[in-house]
Image: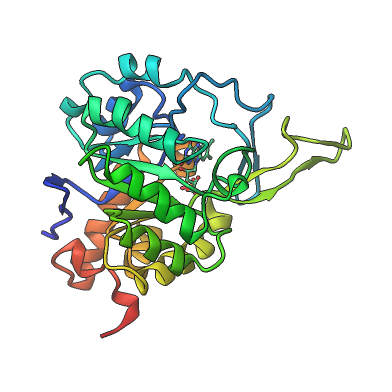
Length: 306
Ligand SMILES: Cc1cc2nc3c(=O)[nH]c(=O)nc-3n(C[C@H](O)[C@H](O)[C@H](O)COP(=O)(O)O)c2cc1C
């Protein structure tokens, strides 16, 4: 039988699927639910220092090949999140924390007061959200220099492995990923949502999202995400969590062959339900058996040749 386990940061994952940030991971019980449905690892929704209301409703809408969202990092703030996620290190699968901040000092604060206190398996920093003023791309966090500075300050605060999350909007993605690696990042997650994009309701003649524009996720994002993971794989040696438009086992195969070690799944959890983790895993096992691959790690980076 094909071996789907992945060894990373001192733990063994049953399979390479990971719940992406912002989709269901808002409470401890919801991440346990994803674990019970077969996710190899789970990521919590990004936590800010102070409570945030986020963008006005509606915060998400569907289109033919994906979702448009402008949630705007709504959430309870780290103090409530500390209580919500207490005991998170005992969940049956590895849990990735996610923090988002307005500058390097605030990032360091959250790493120390939230990530280190709860001892997540690893944590993610989305340095590239395309649609929330003060954060990510709009705050200039996705340049190589800013990425280097933020990651350096994080590495001083905790020994929990840090995963830098990048978006396809970033120019010179390989260079930014390399800056993260040089500053001590332990992995890269690519990609965040793309855009922003906008949807208009033809009957009312009005823009659908409350914020106006939002990030694109789901199948429309997949070829872009594959290209980004491919590019980053050529620039760094640290592992990559390939995320963007994966909803079937063959999508996951593509992502692995582009260079991913783990495969993030977000929008497909909304469109296909929690069963998507088991479907992707079983489909992957069947594909590997039929095609003669023994270990899932044999697929990583295969599209790059020798
Ligand atoms: C409704 C929604 C909320 C999201 N919230 C976050 C978030 O809080 N932090 C983050 O890093 N990414 C967030 N994302 C981005 C996803 O984690 C993922 O990178 C992106 O959606 C691409 O993957 P997918 O096509 O599988 O959804 C969000 C995406 C959606 C659709």
